[in-house]
Structure formats: structure tokens, C-alpha cells
Length: 508
Image 1 (tube, rainbow, N blue to C red):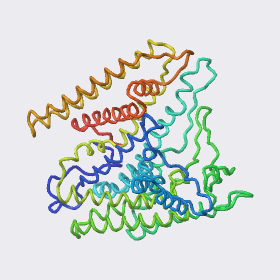
Image 2: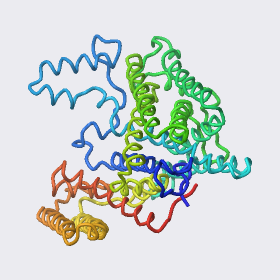
Image 3: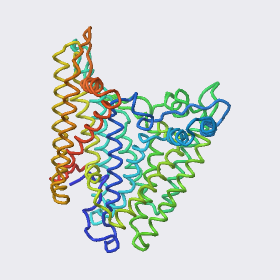
Image 4: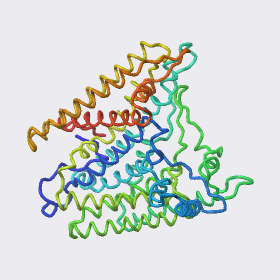
């Protein structure tokens, strides 16, 4: 079984035009896989200093001098750059403001929200045969499980290492439960599932009303004496002002001395719910069997273009921002998501160009599982244990352990790729094995050739940093950083591929 928040019924082998209403869309599987791939990359960058802005969150965009609108100032600066640059075309593309205001990392979380909404019509349709009480019990269970998994992940990520490393016995065990990624998905899923009972037009009205409400809060909420309403910076904005209020809802609830629950972060639920509801509208549209597939693609792409345009224009008032979920940012991401999904639908489900889709279907087959387990395993196995960089033996163990892990991962991947290629291109598939062996040999040579350089003073660092430093010292800052990222992503793809072939899925 699979994670039903992100899954649909079992595949239908018939073409789309002959498929019964409610059949599975491979394009949605691929879209989910693309989001998971982006998540694995941006969560595991080996070198933040050389990765480039597109792989990192944009954060708050600083305003330009002389412009009240952040986006207007950014485009004015961009046009001036084009007029004065030596390579205007290259600079125009690489420095385009939208690329900097909404990076690849910024699309990941809205992509998760959109996927939850897109899959909801399929899961609801599949559950019609069950009693309503059982259906809603499952809905509540999924939301609660996402909350619990999120709290567990946050504990190991933020608190476990401090308690585990304490040698004095002065740090007590304490579980602090707040809002984070999975918690927001769980609460947003529950709210959007309730609103999904509404017909299409009222549901659209609710989504737009939630976005408008959130915009009104960001734009007009009083932020204290001497601060103008609508101020929107990292240090001063309406949401931060609301969370600083001494209201009972923001106070920590402590039923036990070791447990603290707080709900700071609930202000993100309305815009997240709106994003999921927009996804449900897209999912409903794709499931319609009274319209031709081509017409569905055209109208979905048109709706996506309209959403993206509205988001772009709205950003002249409040800029794109993931930290505070500005409505323009979510509308832009919904529009881009609809356009990408319509292209995938046209290519995969209508024209049946599916030979390249397997890798992405595998990535999306265990969406919640790979998010939770990849982060938890990295925290426990790579971030929590420490390495003394002043000891040559410790550094040598890290270096050779890294080499062995890279060799096994690359060899496993070459074996998996060469087998199906052997059936299609014959002995030429051996090129994959030769290329992999060459890369592994080069990696061993470069890492062995560089001597181990222990620190002069005892210094503790995580295994993650130690592995990254070993790769960068041997291959270079940029090359070593991306070697770490690529190997990490490839390893988890191989794990998911093994689970997919054995039909092992994580169901909430």
C-alpha cells in the first residue's frame, strides 16, 4: 500500500481516451517525482557558497532605493543592468528578478501543497464505496499522523543531539511540539478536505477569500508604534507582530514537565489551505470525462497562465515571499504548477511518451516516506555523531568510508541501469559500466592523492561536514559539493527503486 495523501488508485493500462473516469494519471506521478527530486537536492546541498542562488531559498527580498514596490525596484535595476552589461542577453537571463525572488527551493513546499490538492479528487472518489464515518476517520488519522511525524522529526532534528551529547546530566529530556513542514501539511490537509465537500465555485471562492484575508493581514495589520502598516521585512512584518502578541493561543501548553506544545505557525494554515484547494480544482478538471483531453490541457494551461500573471502583478504590492506565504507567491507557484502539469499531461497521458518517466514515478512513489526517512537518517547517522578533525585516524576513516559508500552507490546504480539497457541496445549498455568504473577510479585517485590534514586543535564537527570537507579538498569546492548532493540523491533513488519493485509503500 502507499501514502494515500499523495497517491491515486492502481494504474490503468488502457490509453487515456479509453480509460474509465477516475483512472490514474502518470503525469501526476511524474509531477510528484519532480517535486521530490527538487526537495532532495535543495535539502542536501553540499556547498551553499558555490551552489548558486537558484538552489537556495530567496527569503525576504531587500527593497531598492527610491522604490516603494520591491518588485518594481528589482525590475528597474534589472533593466539598468541590461543596458550597462557587457553581455546583456546572458545577464538578462541569469539576473531575471523572478528567478531570484522565487527559486527552485521555493517551489518545493507549494508543490507538496498542490500535490495534496491534486490527488484529493482521486482519493475521495476511491473512498466513495466506504461508509462516510470510516472515510472521515481516515482523514483525521492522516492529519494526526502527519502532526506526530512532524513533531518526531523536529525533536530529532532540533533537540535530540543536545540531550544525547550532554555528559553532565543537566539537560533533561524535553519534547517541544510546534509547527513545521509536516505539521502544516497535516492541518492544511484536514482543512482543505473539509472544504472539498463544497461544490467547485464555492470552493474557488473560499480559496480566493483565504488568500485575500492573508494579504489583508500582511498589508493592514498594525505592527506597533512607529511602524507603518504594510511594512514587510525579515525583522518587521505583520505575522511576526501577531506571533509576538501575548495571546493565549500563542502560549505553550505544557501538560507534563517534559512536553511543550505551541501553535505559532497557524497563520500559515489559511494560505496553505488555499493552495491545496486550488490543487483540488485542477484535479477535478483533469478527471472530467465530458471534455476531450486536449481541451482539458488547453484550459488547465490557460488557467495556470492566468494565475501566474495575477501573482506576478500582485507582487508589485507585496513581494514574493515563502517565509510568510504571500498570496502572490502562492498564485505564481500554482500557475507554474498548472502549466507544468498540463505539459506533462499532454506528453505522457495523451501522447503516451512514457519511456523516460520511470525514474520520476519511483521518486514519487513514497513521498512522505522519503521526506521523513531521508531527513531522519541524515540527522541520526550524519549530523548527530561528531568527528574530531584533529585526529588523522578519524579523518582517514571518514575519507575511506566516503569512498566505499560512493563506490557501492555508483556500482549499484550502474548495475540497475545496465540491465534494462542491455535488452534495448545490447552490448553497448556496457558503456554505463565503463563510465561508472572510470568515475569511481578517478574519485579514488583524487581523494587518496590529497593528504589528510588534521586540525592543530581538537575540533568536533558532524560527519556531514567531515564528508563534505573531504570531497571539497579532493575535488574542489564546487565539484565536491555537487558530488555530495548527487550521491545522496542517487542513493535515495536506489532505495525507492528497490521499494517500488518490491511493492513496498508507506501508507498513512
